[in-house]
Length: 261
Image 1 (cartoon, rainbow, N blue to C red):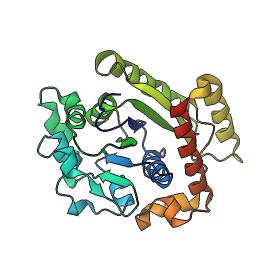
Image 2: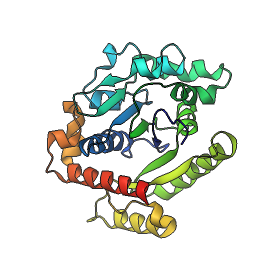
Image 3: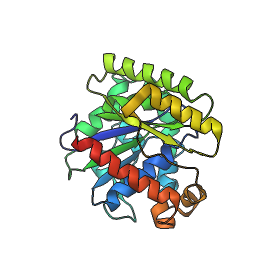
């Protein structure tokens, strides 16, 4: 494990937007917290949807991921409590978007997050998740360099496999150059509609090609899942009986089971 003081770090990544990264970051983290795990979610997406989705207003954030990346604040002093037991957040502040440009001129720019996580000296977490931006940008590279595992969320749609190959290539390159210990956690299929032939075919393809790397559990298309962020709560606090909430609880159990094997 890269950061012994912190706990295992999992980047949730896909260079495509709208494939369930933030939804997964919020709801997997909240589900694990509900299953008695102490969880930290790091919002590395300038859109800040994980931050607002957990009821934190970006305008109120003094020190978030930006301050930590720039070395202005420590991780420990920047983590905030959420309204949900055992779930903590490193929020995205409004200035995170500008960090890409500023980081370009920094020495060791790919290692900034890794460094910040290394210096953490607070109470340990069972799991740390990083919600990555929808691009293979410097922020995503920082996340993958600082992580032990990468979880890929994949929408079962026409070009899914194409984007996935590209992402796998990037992960391979990061392993070669920046983080040889980066392991694949798995591929989570999101927005699955099993009444739709294409969705089913894509799922079959991905499973045939990637085998046991693909999570058994899938995330269905679900109205409650898309409503929950506007209330600033994870879906289980919005409607625990909904298909979306139950699916993420199952994914959380499978995620923990994968750690034990």
